[in-house]
Image 1 (tube, rainbow, N blue to C red):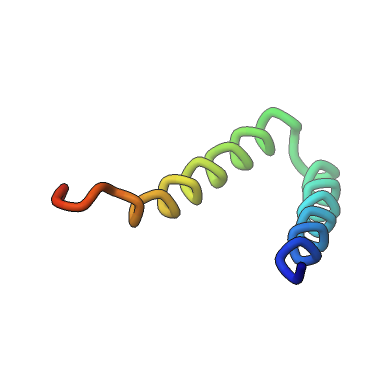
Image 2 (tube, helix red, strand yellow):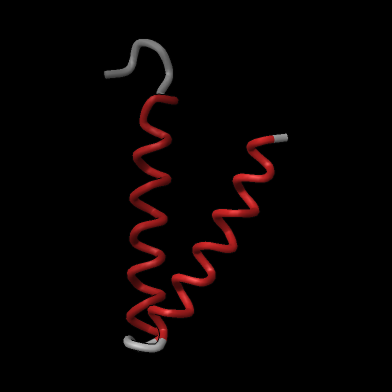
Length: 55
């Protein structure tokens, strides 16, 4: 239950911060940064999930 509440809070926070960022930079630049950070975080999170025995 706590994690669901945190997800909603952080989604609201990221939307507010994205709105503030879009006042200063173009949508294409912000989308590229947003995608790059998301891919980097997803890749770093997936690293411990490698099969046993692989190096």
